[in-house]
Image (tube, rainbow, N blue to C red; front, side, top):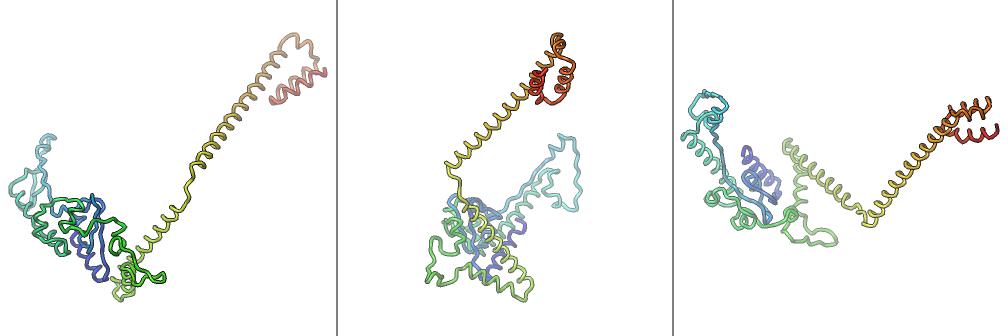
Length: 308
């Protein structure tokens, strides 16, 4: 909860100063500190299955002394006061520590109740009566913890959910709350107050970045999706190319094998006594020259040998 209360108050004050409506939407879990921040809004929308509430404070006291004994650890705490070591796991939990912690929890819880009440989301008594319970979206609306069950799109519409803007000649008769907010921010950006001007400029820059992201997302969505027929044709083409590559590899391997078998056969013939007698010295010299060349010379070898 550290800083949550101050942040919620500052959010409310900033929006009131800028005369800008602050809206919140809880689509998943808006509990404890998250609800403290949401309470700064003047309108809270919730989904039907949202988890809302847990308005209260919780703390934990752990006694790890038995674990220390198991590991052979002897821890001695030296503190400046009795309450200084409250909550330290290396000492047994005392009744005094429990009472002191409970008092602190109750005090901060009352601050929480007062904060939510000041933002218009129930009374302190009603909030205390909830006992820190978490409720669903529709229950939150009935208990006054939310405005209505709505979608995120309705929450950011800055108008009554489901309502449409009346137009005349293609233009809005009245500016939307968003336009009013942007106008107020621009005026604040030109303020003589440097701090206020800096915050307003940062808010305007954030809005511009958000618009750019939305346009980029829209461009991505506009890209046409490949049809089922095109996907099938691409798959067939891929299979055909793979088959061609495999055929070329097999053909290359067969050619290489045949060439080397031819070399082996020729060498075997030349090494026999009969072949040595048949070939003259000139033809034998040509055989040696051709066999020392590349395998492609095998065909030329047979052509030469017929002339001797």
